[in-house]
Image (cartoon, rainbow, N blue to C red; front, side):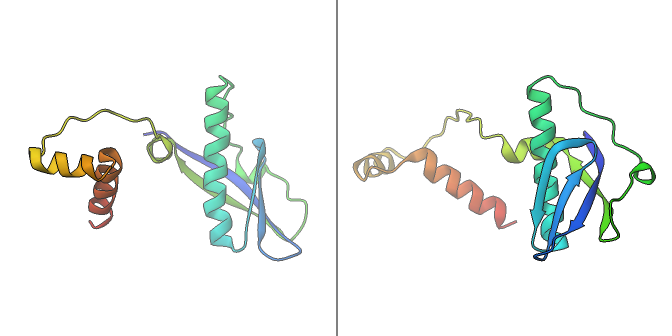
Length: 133
């Protein structure tokens, strides 16, 4: 399990909400209407930045110590963003895998006659089953 903990600077936006920057990843910026929204957006932005660096074979920077990061103004504060690379990759990996299944012949014929997409039906059923737990 690859866990990362990066400091992010939450800047209070003039129009309300927050915009977020990462001192260790200057290309990584995001925003949110509330602190909670900005935190969730920061997790996603961090995931994109780290994945992009990894795909481009660029080094993943070592996170700075929060007490070493200067704040520009009193309306900014440091928040540590926890990021789980494996969970992020599972969530965003849409690579298809082939599955073999068996159904009654009559059901197969009826579904084909109606133009039903078997893969889509199976995906929807699995998602429903997973989310009901």
